[in-house]
Length: 253
Image (cartoon, rainbow, N blue to C red; front, side, top):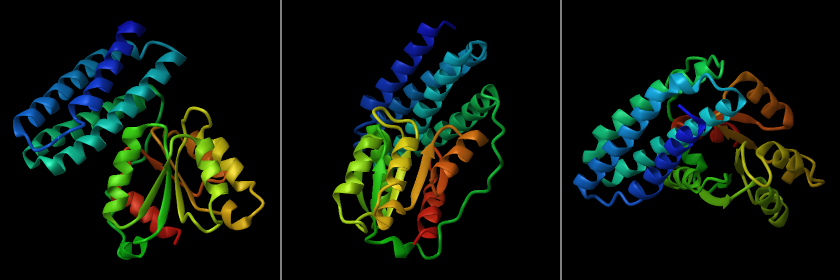
């Protein structure tokens, strides 16, 4: 598989996610066809993954791009299932594909992800009602997915499209305005590492100590260690399990 062909696969998947799944308005036939189309594209990418793994550093970035697209697909398909219950069958298949592909990508990148049991929703989740969270992610789809989950549990959500916007939002508002920040690591303009470092260096201690939770598809130990050393308080792999996310937020109340 050439690099150009791999990029075409990524482009096709992006189109499917962005347009085909954007309006799961309850039309069962359309939703089923959309999910089937997405599964076909993922199957093609899985078939080609073995050959693609032979490339070098560019491959690693490409694999991470695939993982990001898979993460977004799973999250948005879950939202689509809420509007079209009969599409749940296709969401289940997509989850299976995601798990298989993520394991292969992890192996190709030399990762050894730890086995984690399915987290349970925290008992005191009601304490999150009315808390304000800033979601910093340069992917609109990811922000939409996170917002849907957080709003459902009563949180107030604001968005930043890159790290620079996140820093400016923290500086612009009152010191205790945000209760949490969900910070993507890989962002254009300013990444999550630099944004976190700038927030931690703010002169006002309340602003500087806002809990910051890293969100990333890259889960190798070095990424986690760097996130913690730079001043992030927790580290969650994408796609973020809602229970795992809520448990992290509750921990910092």
